[in-house]
Image (cartoon, rainbow, N blue to C red; front, side, top):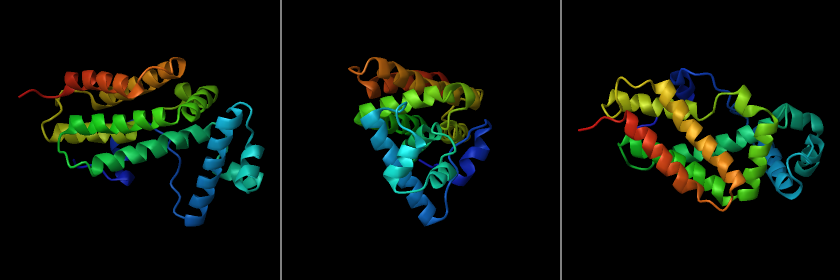
Amino acid sequence: MQIVSREHREERCDVPVEPPPPLSNPRAARTRQALYDAAARLFVDRGYEDTTMANIAEAAGTSRRTAFNHFPNKGDIPMLWVRQMADSAIDVVEHGGTDDVAEGVRAYFRVISEAVESEPELSRQMMLGWTAALGPARYESQLLADIAPMLRDGQEHGQIDRGADVAVAARALSDVLQGAVFRWVREPDSVLHERVDSAIALVLRAITTRD
């Protein structure tokens, strides 16, 4: 399946998103990753609310100034958590060898939902932190920059109904995942990836063309 390159995904999305800015400096990228890894460990050990940026900086072996340069707000850390899972999902779709757009979209969400399930306490703390930072109310989903171009590519190749509103469909798909994850946080014994896959398939059936 053809995936729009990362640098062009956001401009084709047609909706505002605010993913973490990419870092071209390898040293800066390593520092940001060290801060993220330290934050993830602390969130699991202490909880999001009881972890400060000073704690994160100390655990990562950096100064508080450096920590705030990379993450001006603690609520930015869950955004990177989402972006890293989404980037892994894009890699899977790019190398999946399918030209079926619907299957590519399902694979994308499957990778993310399985990643969320694989680290339940980290995922729970990241979602609590994202909510505490008012992320769901303040920002469009970062996933829109990935999903909308996939759907538009599907329209161009006759797999997605040309009358479908790509922006609306992308939001619906993203909302499915977000709602399912919030529900899973409350009901951790449920199987997240199965719920997500079923709901994503339902949305896709409404916009895919029929032979």
